[in-house]
Length: 458
RNA sequence: GCUCCCUUCGUCUAGUGGUUAGGACGCCGCCCUCUCACGGCGGUAACACGGGUUCGAGUCCCGUAGGGAGCGCCA
Image (cartoon, helix red, strand yellow):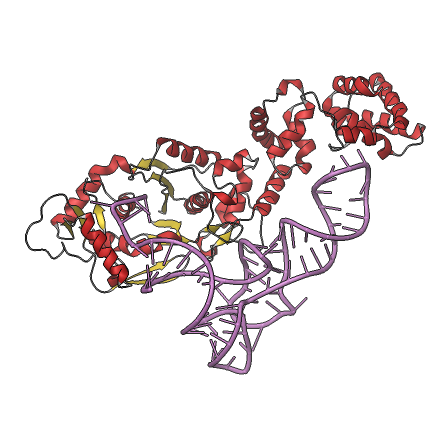
C-alpha cells in the first residue's frame, strides 16, 4: 500500500508551496487508495510554535486535505530517536563527537579559504582515546562509493559519498536533528513515497545512507521544483500573499486555489479545469514537471471566477457568508445570500469583491455624486417618478413585473431602455454598476426601492 | 568555492525524431448589451546559445550561458 506524508515544520503559516506539496501527497495517496499522513516536524524547539501548528492545521482543513493518520509530532517521539541513535552507536555506525563549536568554526573557515566545500573532517571518527565533555552523535557516512536513487520526477540521481560528511544526528543536549528524525519516521511510518520540495534533493543521499545502516529499504522519492514569484525569483512576502489563509481572506475559493496549484507544475494534456474527483483519477507523479514554476495571480483569479460561476450557488454562498460576516453586514436586512451569488457570480472575481459589491442589498447606500449628476438629470425625473408609481402598484414583486414597468414607462416617454435603466440604477444602488436592473431591484425588495426612489429623486 | 538540480510564447503548459510548434491565463481588436460583467469570434507571442548524432532535431548526446538549491548542534 502506498503511504505518503506531508511533514511541515511549524515555524509559520502554511504557504502555497507547502500546500502544493501536501496536495500532491494527498492526491497520490487517494489515487492509489493508500494512506496520507500528516507529521509535524517540530524538533527545532526554538522556532516551532503552537500557533504555527494551528495555522497549518486550519489551512489543511480549509483546503479539505484530510489526513488518514496524524498529526504526529516529532517532539513526542524523542525516546524513539534516542533508541535508534543508541543502536547505531552500539553497532559502530555512529560515534560520539566531542569537537567544540570553535574547532568546527575554524575548520569551516579554513576549508572555505581553500575554496573547498565545508564539511566535518572526521576527527572524532578516528580518535583513539575517549573524549571528554559535551558531545554530539554523528552518523558514520560511507567514505567511498556512490549513492544512487531513481527520482520519480527527475530520473536517476547519483551522489558520491566523498561529497558527504558525517552529519550530526543528535545534538549535545540530546535532541535529534532533522535528517535523523525524518529517516526514523519515514521508516517507522512505512512511508513508501516521499514527495517533497527539491530543496531536499541534497539531503536524500544522506538519508538513504542512514536508512541502509538501519537495514531499512529507502522509500521512493519525488522531488518537486519550487514555486517562484511572478518575477521568477524565489517566492516571498514581497510577491503578495504566500500564506494559504491569506487567499481565503482575499476571496478565493479553496477549489480554485487547489486547481491552480495542481496545474502549477503538473499537467494532463491541455486540460485546465479539474474537479477533485477527476484529479484523484488523473493525477500521476509522472505528469509533474521538473522545471520550477512561477506563480501567476491572474490565472488563479480566472480560475476563482470560474469556480464562483460554476459551483453550486449554495456552496459559494456559504463561503461568501464568511466575507459578509467579516464586513459586519447584517444578512437579515436583505435577500438570501444564494440569490446574491446567482446575481453577482459573473461580475466578481473574488468573494471579497462580491461581498463589497453586495452591501447595497443590506445596508444604506452612499451615492456617487458624479454618477448622480451625470445620470439623474431633470429630463429623466418624470420617468423615475412614473416608474415609482408603477412599482407601488405592482401586485407581485418579481423581475418580470419590474421589467414590464420599466419598459412600459420608457416606451411611453419615448426613451430608450438604457436611458431609463441607468438613472434607475444610480437612484437605487448609488452607482452605475450592478446586475441587470430588474434583477437588482427584485433583490433589493420593493420597500428599499420605493424608499430610495422617493428619498431624493421624486 | 564545491556538489546537485533546472531551461518551449510575459506566465502555466502540450510535445517523447518528421507538427503551419497546440491549449490556457494575460493583453489587444470586434460582436453581444440597460451599466458592469459573462459569453462568442479573431489577433499578439516561445523551442536560451553553440556544437554534434541523424535523411531529418523542441524532442537524443556534449559543451556554454543563465537561473535555483544544498554545503548548520535549521528544517
